[in-house]
Amino acid sequence: MPKGSRTEREPTILSYEEVRQRCASGRPSLLLGNGFSIACDEVFTYRSLYEAAVRAGLSSRAQEVFQRLGTNNFEGVMRLLELSHWVAHTYRLVQSGNSEMLGDLETIKRALIEAIGGSHLQHPGEILEERKERAVEFLKQYRSVFTTNYDLLLYWITMNSDPPLFDDGFRYDPDDQSRLVFSFYSGDRQMFYLHGALHLYLEEGRLCKHRSGTDGLCLTDLIRESLDRGQYPLFVAEASAGQKLRQISESTYLTRCRIEFISLKGSLVILGHSLGEADGHILDAIIRNRRLSNLYVGLHGDPESPSNQVTQATARRLRVQRAQLAQQYPLEVYFYDSETARVWDDYAS
Image (cartoon, rainbow, N blue to C red):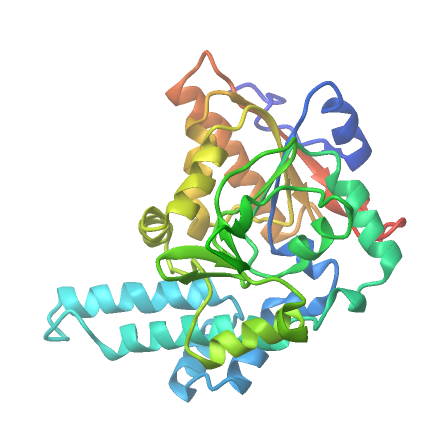
């Protein structure tokens, strides 16, 4: 390929305002990753969650795996344990389909859920009102919002306007007005939890949503009470994209969210998501959705950092794979400085 070709040139890093202007003629959709939550409060960083998981009883053996990898990335450790079990089983080092590695894998998943529930901000009042208002203004630009986050921030923010900014599909159960159940979507803006969330849970075969005000308890108290009863939230925390996809297929709600994501058209803006290997099912959906024509990927910090270089390489690969699959439906990929989006503040941090 000639020097100076598109793939060899350094990518132009747009500002968020430039992204907004480019999307002004349509109704873009938004995909949020953990960077959205971390920008609000560092309690949502992997390091903070790991420390909370240790306090929640993460086994010393599992902690050694984290230390060996030198990472606080739960998905990376879970993926390693899953692959290690496969190798041990293939080489007949374990005699059955179960192993201590799979046991630790399940322990880590439970610890992650309990860590998020135990270390979460207590209530929306811990976020300054002007920051919530700023986040509402940011989200208003989008037709649909998809998130891979498990925390309550997006829910709190959407409920900060009257009526709620986005419809999440939950309605009062006609047979039991004390609970909200997943029913149907309506309205102009809709919200989807691609991997579940802390406030979603199964009861009597139906997907329900915790709501504030029940018995005078705040939402985080309700979630912790449920955890104490052994009632875990709808939560996709598998090690690999394949396993995540299998778990998604077992849930009517998560399947609906995936269908909506696959059906996107026009432009998709990605904020706070690294396009990691563990979310390969999301990347595959982007590749295969011929109606999705523009992808705007947010980069946090130095574009030349190793993590941003990996994200950029992944995004460019999506463009190439789309061209190989359907050349007449190209995917244009752009990068922007996510800090200029100023989601929570009126100034760039």
